[in-house]
Length: 524
Image (cartoon, rainbow, N blue to C red; front, side):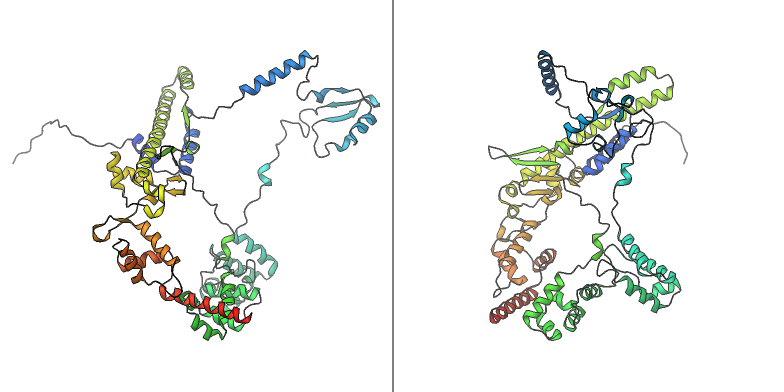
């Protein structure tokens, strides 16, 4: 076999991921906040980009002010120039001025010094003149006041506890151990490291670590530095002087509280139905995560990218949220003026690249807006029943269905619906909310949305009576009678996702509430 070298020309198609294409894909899946940050970075980096500011309607105001000025001149009155009083000689005595204004001149602006009031020639004449530049209060050279220094910073949980530790003990060893324990407290306020581990790492006596931990657990907020939920609740109950033997027994068996086994709790605590209900109410009023009040992150408000509203003819109008879209412009005139004065090849190459990137960014933003509007319009068309009747009429929908309807790739629809929201008359919902799995219908009926089925399960449970608590099998039978072919394990999964207790726990809860109600009536 011989090896031969030769040249061949082949024609083929290939997708080349250019930087511009990568930018367009990246912008498509960004949320509003991330997009705003990205655009801000581009505005700082690219001198040819500028923010499109809304036009101010100042022409009318200017014309109105001009007409007022004409009228004032016609009446023989000439309005003074702004701040002209700063350099005007006041031909009046100090006593007359103070009498007219019923105050003293040195009390007008006691904390500010925009002007100087001095007696002219030692007489009664006063002259109000601005201070010389370079003096305090009117200087351009003097250091401007630092307004940021007056802003208050949010106190973190660690700083809050550390400040209390400094006042609680002066012993260096206790302060060292206490600082280590405070550093081991998580955001929820729990100590996630054991006493033995802390003692071993610090080379300290476990008894000393335990004593310091007891000291830290007395700090504000109550329940801090607890090692589990039971200890956290116990600390708060001691703070309220409510940790009696019955409450201590209740806190020791929180598993029975979670199971709503009220009969076992009554036997364990040795109390009646009414007392047990009061104790459980006291437990519910406690804070299971005492550290969450400190250093909490700001709540991110879900701002809709698209608005949906009803049209007069019964259809739906889908429009973009203009306030959420960043607006940038390419300054072509600035580019033409600068490129004429650029002599170096590097400067011309930089300007050419900046112009190309600016054009691509504006086109990518426009394409992103059009794609979001196109996908949102198809979602509204597919889920028309939801916008008219509510969640019970939510249809099964997947990305493939929308992609085929609008002629886009499924991955593009996935990027568009990520981190996007639709503002409707029923609230602001994420686009992903409208894509739900299909639950087959019984006896050849149409499929149902999983979200609609989950909503129906909640309705059935909310409507049950203490004498007729629905089990999972009963829920399956009711749903099948309504045309939903669903398995029992699916009902259990949906019920748990809604945080609905089992039928046994709900029956116990109904019985406990009924017993407490009858006991209260008997006491009356």
